Length: 206
Image 1: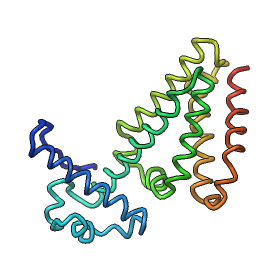
Image 2: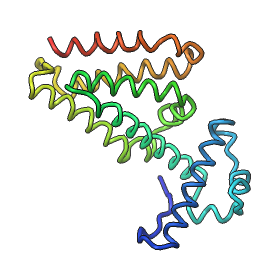
Image 3: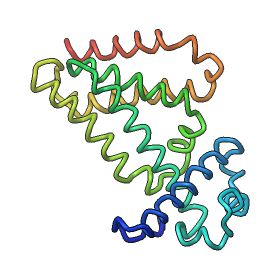
Image 4: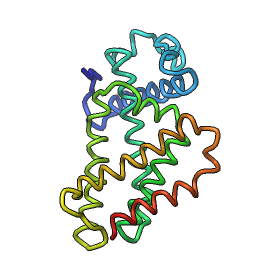
């Protein structure tokens, strides 16, 4: 169970200091994981990096597992923001699907360690929490709007939910390949990724 400790949200100097310290903990933990892997995350070394004692970290996170899950949740939030920024320039729903998919793949290519942390560990609060649900709802809403406007076509059981799942499965597969076995070749793949997604999306517009 996720057991991150929470604090009062009042906008007071103390609350701001707590929030800043929490963010420093998360940032340093993330950097340590990226550099050394999940097993290289040391609570003692993390405490030293922000001039804290190991025991003091438990004011913010009750366990190493809770800290890792909070880092994962932050990564999901970062991914959602990155996708939203790219989708915001689209002029129709097919383009929203294209730009959102390319952003998802780009994030994985730029942050392979974080992507592994997000998707290749056991399910947790971070992978079933607010940020994941937000991403699912946003993708489904785009598809539903596209169908309502006649820009996308649902056919029987291949409804809005199925189209959304198809989109996510496609970009996740490409992103996973680029973040692992094709990591050193990712600079050569952006145009091919765009072509693949365009072909997939064309199938929703027929």
